[in-house]
Amino acid sequence: MITCEGLVKIYKTDEIEVVALQGLNIQIDTGELMAIIGNSGSGKSTLLNILGGLDRPSAGQVKVGDWDLLKITDKQLVEYKRSTVGFIWQNNARNLISYLSALENVEMPMMLSGNYDRAYAKQLLEWVGLGNRMHNRLQELSGGEQQRVAIAISLANRPRLLLADEPTGSVDTKTADMILSIFQRLNQELGVTIVIVTHDMSVAGKVGRVVAIRDGMTSSEFIARHPAVGATDGHWPTGIAQAHEEFVVLDRAGRLQVPKEYLTALGINGKATMEFDGEKIMIKAPNPNQTLK
Figure 1 (tube, rainbow, N blue to C red):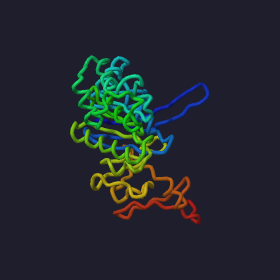
Figure 2: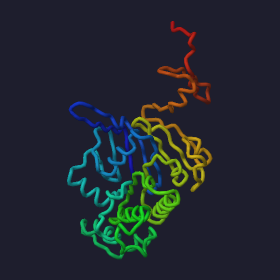
Figure 3: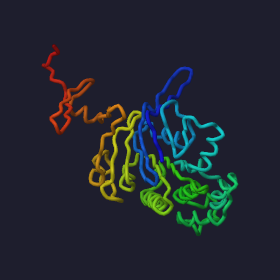
Figure 4: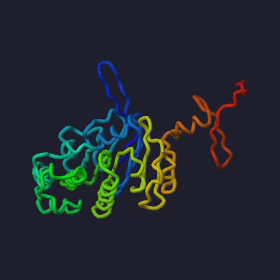
């Protein structure tokens, strides 16, 4: 469904240049429910904006289905955003039109695309548990209910890909669990590919795969050993160790990112020694007494 190779995004102004993504590699299969996790400034939201057609990549390769987002024209980009991808923002003000009812909000993108289907709009609100609230105005809905309306809106035009930017960031734990359960159901019943960007480690136990991004590059992956197992303590990465198996991600040139905390614990700064014993590769701090000949 999604292939990114050597993906680069550079933001430039007259005085500054910021490299948000620096050669990121990631593949996401059709029908996956997965999360992208990273600290602020890691590049995860930039990646989501590129996949959503909201931002243009600077270099590398990024394909979603048959769409090449590096070469796509402006006209094609509009069609891509209308037909292929749905987007959920953390801030409900960006998802919803305040003076419309929940049902009218879901119907709006259908009207704009020429694919109006009131029965399907009602069905979407039923799916997210708002069948008895569809005619309520937004000010009559809680924050969690508004976020569920946003999920229904994102599916209005039957996209193949659903992107969610911190969908549980502004709700309580109970509501967050409900929202993630909705994502699981939509993924299973509709087969839609769902990518969640978050810094919340509790999300990790609700998805099949977690990809960590550090400094604009893919650094590691966590694959679920068994589904729907929650994080135990919310810390990275030990909080999901019981539910996931961690992998370090190699790029096509064989390079890998070693987590900074590992290097710090070993006293490695700048250079390291590497040994291969036939089964394992060992990385160590250089011997301070060793001199080069």
